[in-house]
Amino acid sequence: MFNEYRDLLTVAEVCVMLRICPSKAYRMLNTGELIGFRNVREWRVLKSSVIQYISEHINNDVHQ
Image (cartoon, rainbow, N blue to C red):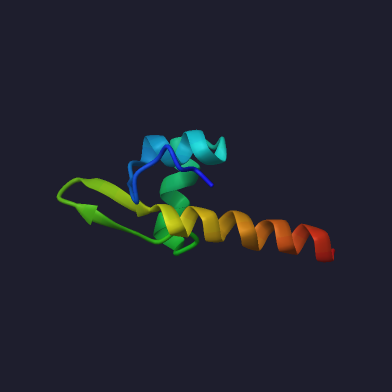
């Protein structure tokens, strides 16, 4: 999944992957829904965190 992306993503890449706006991505980073870290002024997000987020939400939707 997402083989075309590197292991560390920018917020812009996360927005494209999840089809969300930047403010939603930053909110998810600040609340811990996505795992990332700040590299000086910019966030870097783990691709595995995005994949985990998608998997958890797919599983939650199926079980509801």
